[in-house]
Amino acid sequence: MSDNNTERLLANRLLGSTQPLCTFKHVKTVLIVDDDLGFAFWLGQALDRAGYETWPARSVTAAKSLLAEVRLAVDLLVITASLPRATVLAGYLARTNPDLKIIAVYENLTAGFKPFPKASAVHQKPQIIDTAAKLEWVQLVIGVLRSDKEHSLS
Image (cartoon, rainbow, N blue to C red; front, side, top):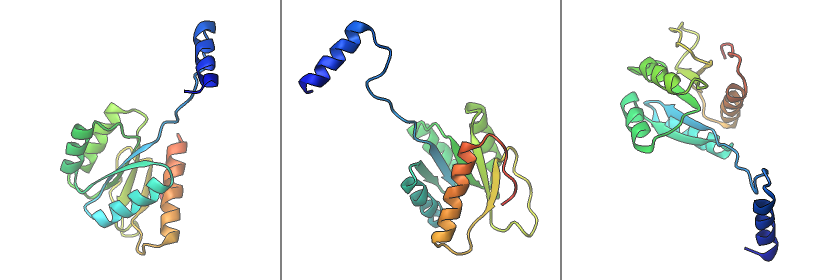
C-alpha cells in the first residue's frame, strides 16, 4: 500500500468515516436451465459478455445439484417451460428469493402454450442463432432485471 493510501485508511479509521474506501457492485446471477446445452451456452456467453454471471444446467435435477454444490443466489431463472418439474424449481427459487425474476422459454409461442406461473416474461427460442437474436435476448434480460413490472408476451 502506498503512503497516501495508508494515510487515508488511518485517517478514515481515526476520524470514524462512514464512507467505504471502495464499493462493489452486485453482479446479477442467471441460472439457465435447458435440455439444449447449445442454447444454454450460447445465451450464457452472451450474458457473460453483458456483465452477468451465468450458470447452465441441462435439467431441473442438474440445476438442483448445481444450486446445492455452489450455493448460488439466483437473480434470474431462464428455464424451458416444458422441462419436467420446471415449475417446481421456479417455485422453490421464488420462495428463497422473493425478488427472483423468471423468463419462461418456449419452442414455439404461436402454437399455443401453457402459461408458466410467476414468469416475469416468456420468450421463444431463436430459430436462427445470430447477432440479432443475441441482442434481443440480452435486451430482454436487462429489461426483466431492471423492471418490477411484468413483461408482456414477446
